[in-house]
Length: 246
Length: 294
Ligand SMILES: Nc1ncnc2c1ncn2[C@@H]1O[C@H](COP(=O)(O)OP(=O)(O)O)[C@@H](O)[C@H]1O
Ligand SMILES: [Mg+2]
Image (cartoon, rainbow over all chains, first blue to last red; front, side):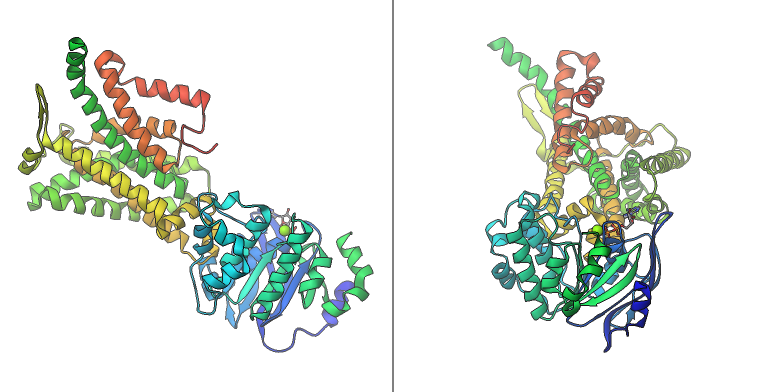
């Protein structure tokens, strides 16, 4: 039933920035993505909602070229990236903030921040970063992993805003953080949307997702099973509760 | 008091010899640590690559008349390039599987390199005369005489160890290296060509071994087994310092050379064993090594 609805829905109109078709991915022998279809237009914030183990993280990793084997098609700004190495996908203009944040213990805060190379003009300057994230300046010389969870999340996002990547893949930035911090992260995502960044956001918390996103995809068993525009979200709560089991 | 001074004077040469050995341990274990950190490969060919460095310097001199100073640069570059080819052709194929295979492969490479050298040059060893200008560095303190070349070895090894440490800890390239040691996939997803970095890191680690080999050539006879003699102790150094710790490998290298030298004075029979006794104690009490992260 839900699947039929997805099929009826017209694909995002206008030129897609990211166009994922029939994406399948494997970790060794285990087949985790079973034909994902996603479209994101320039300037949108789109979420992947779904239960634990649904395949949201794997989708981001597959887009980034980090799963083992994958098949299907991923077109970014018209360029097919399914066969590319992760570093070339990054250089095409996609940046990734992993679920575990990936702050490096052997690097200080500034080194962590400056690690990803600038791949194109148009990223935030270091002054803009420090205005958005004053803590990162105060704690510049601290070991990266000595920051609080919230600060580490800010650092993980800040470092990919510098690079000039146009599409940001954010994996559960609100996970495990206090409500105040979650609000700050929400404000930050709205801020970067205004600056013209396009975001694919993984979330389990749809109340948070609702405050930042234009559209939502629901993921189950490694495929998209439903799609909800943000303004329909409140009307679709029952359906979502069922998907997410909350 | 007089007695003590006399004792110290007697002990000094051994202790200094120990520290000079320590300089070689430090250079070699540093290369092993850099390679292990980045590639997760225990490079058993390290001793053979050290030997190769010495032989390349010897060949440059006796076949082409290229002297010590150019060889100090050329031999590490040549052997490093061989390392790059080894990594591309063989080692890079093993990253996805167990450590053990990388260890077996590099051990096999060591046997091949040593075999080829033995086949072509025999096992007796070649002499490589140090350049005469080192006479200016000769140290004479009373009865104690230290040839200038050994002073140079100490200076050169210390400088290269420090420079390597500085590059890794204080530069942008070093931050890529440290980050890729922790999470190679994420670093690659930031747009950095990590496979290329791994190749170059292996080449650099191998070049360090070859550099140590050139330094050693005028001291020890240039023979196919010269690396094997060192490398067993160097692996003990690496285990004691902690696999993959850069500063740890340098400090531990010098420290164990010093301890060996001191042991040589008081209990000569134990000087070769002491490192392994320390290794056993460290393994039992701090399995990650003195400087390793558990
Ligand atoms: N490295 C891995 N190796 C094998 N299976 C994995 C790996 N990572 C995730 N999986 C499996 O893939 C499926 C999807 O996981 P994931 O994408 O992490 O889900 P989500 O992010 O939606 O919680 C799960 O069944 C999970 O067990
Ligand atoms: Mg996940």
